[in-house]
Length: 112
Image (cartoon, rainbow, N blue to C red; front, side, top):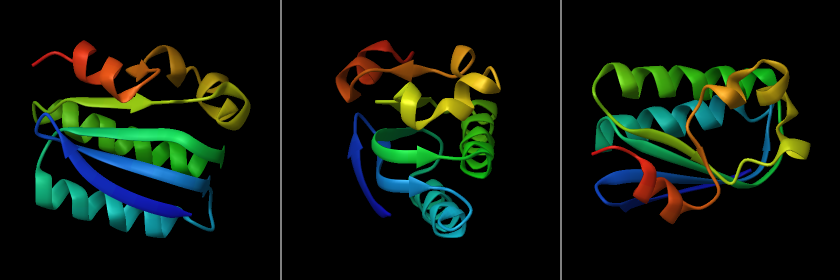
């Protein structure tokens, strides 16, 4: 798994390449915590290049979604693909979380 972070419109944009599962969860958690500490509330996760995601990774994403929204931040997921992240649909979270096709769609669609 590779992780990178940039900023766009004062939001941290975390790009994930690879597998999000029990074997990568701790590293993913550390990265998200560091990004949140450095950039504050407001995060977009670009999952376009995720090849598989399990429920542990989804739980971590939900945690950051709730933490961002609770503190007045904006949060979105970009590039989520059903075949690679089925767990989001199985749990019903795909219908509740802010999903966008592209980063620009998220930047345009998120409230200020």
